[in-house]
Amino acid sequence: MRCKMGLASAVLQLTLFSSAGARANVEPQAFSADIVSLNAGGEPLGAPARLRAADHKARIEIGGAPDGFFLSDPAAGTALFVRPAQHLYMDARHSTPLTHIFVSVDPHDPCLLWRAAAATAGVMNTGEWRCDLIEREPVDQREILKYRVMTPNQQPSYGWVDPAIGFAVKWQAADGKVFVLKNIQFRAQPASLFSIPSDYRKLDPQALLERIKHSDVWADSSK
Image (cartoon, rainbow, N blue to C red; front, side, top):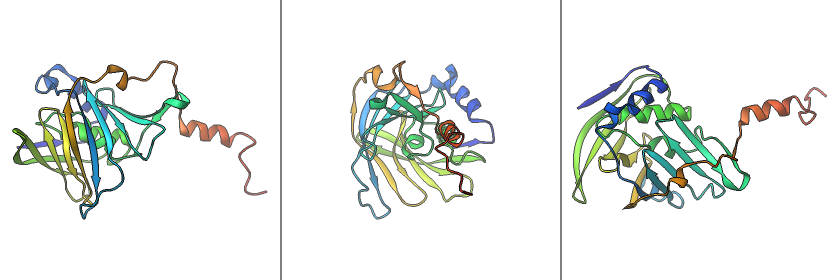
C-alpha cells in the first residue's frame, strides 16, 4: 500500500483531512500516554513527556519546558506553546519534533497529516512525502501499522500507527532516535486541556523583535 503526496499546500491537505469523507474512516479514542525518547543506542534521553489526546487534538507536556505545554490541532493547522503563568501562547514552530510526530492521522494515509504538521512547524515543508506500509504487527491484541516514511533529501524514518487511537505509537527518526508511547490509558480527557482561555494573549516573537529594533533598547553597533 502506498500513499503519495505532492506539492499541495498544507492548508489544502488539512481541509481534505477534516472533510467528512476523510474522517469517516477514523475516530480515534481519547487517551493519555508517556512519550519515551531514546538515542540511537537505545538509552533514554531525559524524562518522559506526557501526551493527552482527544477529538483529533493533542497536548504534550515536556519536562524540559515545565512552565508550559504544547497544543496541536491538525484540523486548524496549529501547533502552539502555551505558558499559563504568563497568560501567553505562541506558535511552537520547531521547538520540538514531538508536535509533528504525535498528531492525529488517518491510519491508512498518515503522510497527509505528518507532512502538514511538519509544514506547520516550519520544517521539511516542500517536496513529496511517501509512506509505504511495510508491516502489520500484532501488539496487545491490536494490529499496528508500520510505515516507511520518505521525505525530501533525507534517509527514511519509520512510523508505527495504532488505528485504535489514530496516532503513531512509535517513531524512528532518520538519525536513529526513537520516540515511543508507553503506559497508554484509554480514558476521556477534559476538553479544557485542549483549549486556550480567551484572556490569553498571543506572542509574536518576530513582531516583538521588530518593536525592540525600533526602540532605544536596540543598540547601534556602529557607535
